[in-house]
Image (cartoon, rainbow, N blue to C red; front, side, top):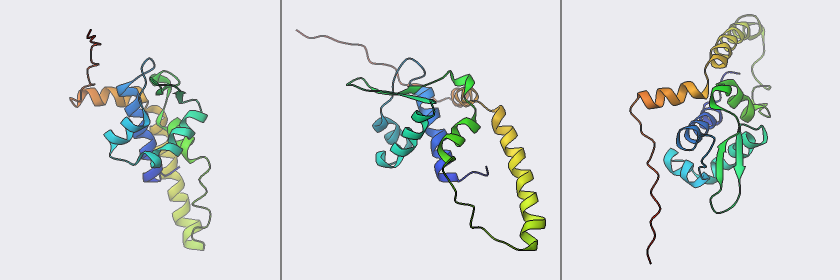
Amino acid sequence: MILRRDRAMTAVLIMLDVAFHAGRSGTVSAADIAERSALARRGIEPLLQALSRTGLLESIRGPRGGYRLGRPRRDISLVDIINAVTQDDNSGEDGPQGPLFSKVIEPCWKQFDNELTAQMKKTTLDDLVKKTESCGLKRPLSEPITFSI
């Protein structure tokens, strides 16, 4: 599961954004996620769909719609997020061959992969939200509703 930086890290960023700004009760729009992350909205849509299909995100339709967490953040590990967006990724199957690769590099790589996977199973979205808060980042205050007559 050695990370493909672009897809896996973007998915973790999306999930952290939703957890930090909306949680399980509020919603966050795809446009807001894209803007805060400096990403193109059309670029994150496939990831949002994959995360929704696996139940990590819940998609809410309508004028107040958007995305919210599909499960409590303490129940979502980094491995869950990465597996959701890389399960159809077959990018490493046409790799190198030969005895140096099969006898040295591949076993070493598998060991690194196993160690990384074990650490990521222990790390939850809740851990990342707490880290975000400890870094001094603040959630935006919701604006009070004002009426004018």
